[in-house]
Image (cartoon, rainbow, N blue to C red):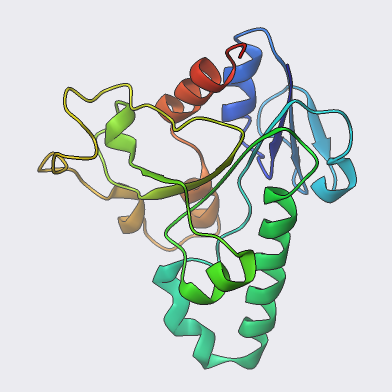
Length: 199
């Protein structure tokens, strides 16, 4: 398949699809961190380039529930939130047959603009990583992502105890947002393995 990984500079998801023989490209305003097929440009200019699948990671700064309290601190943040939600909506409704858009748990104002709530919520510990980081998926034309490291029904059992939230405890730094935005390898591999299958 021709696969677009939107808003990815790390190459993690792109390379997981490349390793399974797909024609996968990442696209971001930033350069790629590792060599590979990459478009350094606004992804909105490339949504009609004949992709079979897109996995998108739009910025969450003004959309995530954890930051909703900051919207009231400055009027410009509401404007940024509206722009962010509009960008998210354009990705979700792009003319591509199979789409997954990921973000953290989102606040109600963004959901109202987007017009739908998430299809699925996953955690890194479901895919072999020993920590928590709630990630929501909005899916179109794709099945739910099946956890690769669960021995129980993910919809019936509580999460394992003792999981850490390492990314939430990172000290302030210029690259903190980058380190928090990278997709876990286990999740990327599951996406490529499951969503890269012929249907």
